[in-house]
Every structure is written in C-alpha cells, then in structure tokens.
Amino acid sequence: MNVTPPNPHKPGQSPVRPGLGTSMQQWGSSEEILAELLHSQRQISQMAAELGEMRSKLADRTHQMTVLQHVAEILAATPKVNQVVSVLMDVFVQEYNAKRCVIWILEDGGSCFLPRVGNGIPKSQWSQFLLPAPNPFPESPIVLYQAQWLDMGSLGGTMGALTPAGKDTSLFFIPFEHQLLLMGFAVLELETGHQLEDDLDSLTILQRQVAVSIYNAWLFRDLGEQRDALRTKTGELERANAALREADRFKSEFLALTSHELRTPLTGILGFTRLVLDGLYEDEGEMRQMLRDSYHSGQHLLALLNDILDLAKIESGRMQIRMEPWSLHILVEELKPIAAAYPRNPGVELAWPTDLKEMPEVSIDPGRMKQVVLNVLSNALKFTKEGTVTLGVERGIGCINLTVADTGIGVSPEAQANLFQKFVQADGGHSREYGGTGLGLVICKHLMEMMGGSIQLHSEGEGLGTTITMTLLIA
Image (cartoon, rainbow, N blue to C red; front, side):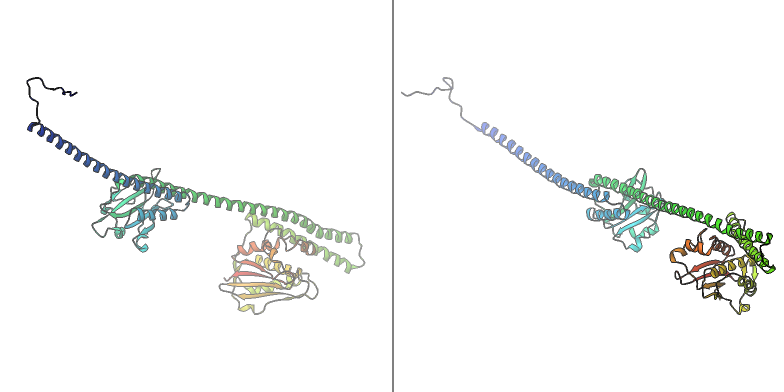
C-alpha cells in the first residue's frame, strides 16, 4: 500500500525553495568561522612560541641553578680566599661571557681592596689596581651594595687598563656584601646588550654565596691562627714547665752539693785550728802546714760564698761594672802568679801567650775580667788530669778573643747546652769527683755580657778536651 507523506505546508501554499538570501547567510557564517580558525591558529602559534621561550628560560634557569649548586658545593669545601676567587672567575668567564674581569678582596686589616685574580688583562697591570676601603670609588656616587653598570668616570688613572676598547662593551660592578661589610667585588666587561635582568636572581644568590665564603675563609684562617698560637703557647708552657722541673732538680742538687762544699772547707778550718790549739803537732813546721791548710780552706770557703753573693747581685741588678781601656799584657801578667798557685795534677802544664804588648787595649772592668779568666783557668786545671791548659789570644774584627783550651775530660754535646745555666755542671758524677757549685760559668757569662762581650764553650765530646772563648771589645 502506497502511503503519501504528509505535506508540511498548509493547503493552498507552495513549498519554499532556497534562494539568494539563504546563500548569503551561509557565506557570512563561513567567513566568521575561518576568521575564528585563523585567530585560534595565531593564538596557538603565539602560545607555542611563548611555551618555547618559557622552556628555554626554564632550561637556562635549570642550568644556572645547577651551576650555582656546583659552585656552592665547591665554595663550602674551600677554606681559602684564593680558591674562592678562582672558582668565581671561571663562572664569570664561562657563564657570563666576560671579556675581561678583575676580582678584589678586602685586605685583612680593612684598609684597602687587593686585586686577587684577573682575566683578559696581564697580571702586571691588574695587580697594580689597589683600591681604598671602604669605598673603592670615592669620586663616584656608586651604590656599593648594588650590582650595576659602572660609569667610566669612576675609574681612576691606575684603572685605565679596564676601560673598554670598543663601544659594544661596558663594565658591570658586582659587590660581595656580608652584614653591611663589602668583603670584595668584581668588575666585568660585558657586551652592552647583555640582558642581566634575567640573571639577577642567580647573580644575587652567587653574590651571597661568595660573600659568605670569603667571610668563612677569614674565620677559618683566624681560627687556624688562633689554633696555631694556642698550640705554640701550649708548647711553650710545656717547655717552661719542663724547664721549671729541671731547674727545681738542679736547685735541689745545688743545695745538696753546696752544703757539702761549704761544710768541707769549714770542717778543715775547724779541724786544723783545733789541732793547733790543742798542740797536736810535732814541730813548728807541722804547725805552719796546718795553718796553711786552714788558710787555703778559708780561701776556698770565701770563693764559694763570693760566687753565691755575686749571683745574687747579678740577679737583683746590683752588680756594678766599671769599664775602662786596659792592656792585655798587664792583665795576663797579673793572672800568672795567681793561676800558678792553683792546685793541679802533676804533669799538667799551664801555657801563657807571648807578644801581648802589640795587642790593642780592650774595654773591660779589670777586676771582673780577672775574675772571669781565673774562674775559667781554675776549671780547666781542675778538670785536666794530664796534658796542658793553654791561654791563647787572637785578634778579630773589632774584638780580641781570649781562649782557654785544655786536654781534660771534655763535655758531651747534650751537657754543653746547659752549662751556662744556674746550678748546672757537666755531669753529676763530676760534681762529686771534682767539687764546685756550678755557678762559675753562669757568673762568667753574666759578667762578660755586662762588659759588652761574650763567652762560648766548645768540646768535641767526653775525653776530648774543652775550649772556652771569651770575646772582648777593642777600646
């Protein structure tokens, strides 16, 4: 069965056909759609370009952060300023493409800024760029704590080598400030069109890292110096304590020896005097011998007491020296009879110098000089069992050297360093074998120094003899 579709139009009306107006409407809609598509395409292209730029900036920022992290790790492990500025110079040259660059660091005393490293300029030039502190550019209104382009007028005459050679580059100032103290700064020659605005954040971080690293390097150095000073003081205290213990030991030995030395002649004096008083002698000759022995014991006792008194005067500053020109010939002639009477072993020869009349006069205190030479001769004779004791004279430049050389027991190298100290003798064993208080050489040393001279001892070792040299100034 055929079904006729219903007519949407009312009866009596003909159907509507598309005409010109409908086509125009459709064409207008197509243009709008095309325009919207083109606009959208342009927006997409712009967004893509912005996205690419953002990706590029992100890559640059990521690279900067990586570099800063690497630099921070290096600076944290670097306790020296020279290493800090070396790392910083590499960053400026490689990351900022600096044509030329010089880095200054505040000098320890804070009086000036010293150039520590330079690039693109010979060291003979940049090493001369010494700048004052706290403002390195006093004639320029530069803000010290702010990175900025540097006016050429702020450069002094000595900084002429930093002036850009062409018009395409300019100087940029980068300060390193910590706690309102300008620790240092850098001057970079960069291309004039260099966009530093994008690098300001990373540059600020770098500035802070470097400033803190320089400050920490100062602290580390100061702590190191204080540690070294403390270690030195500790060592000095330990040596002083050891010296005090040694001095205390020497003093104890000295008191024991001095008691013995003083008691021995005193016992002899009392003993011989008692024998004479009791008449316990066979004849007048034996009595005279007892009196002579008593006299010698008294002289020995007086010498011991004089040594102790002289040392006390020297240490209290009450020892007086009267300097005057004096002839060595007269000095030696006065020494001969006194030294010849000193006790010595049989066969020990005492040799004297000759032709002393041609020697110039020396500046001495004659009495104290005789005391020194006699003390040295007495020791030489006492410690020489066989051989000779020789007094020699030798002229030097502006001085005369008196030497007393013996073939005696000698002194070990270890003991030589202590012989001019109080209460010290060459060996404790020798002290008891040969006697003495150990004050003679100490007194001689002080007296020689008070007369402007010196005294020195030399020995090749035990059993190899000893030579003592006394240096006198020519009058």
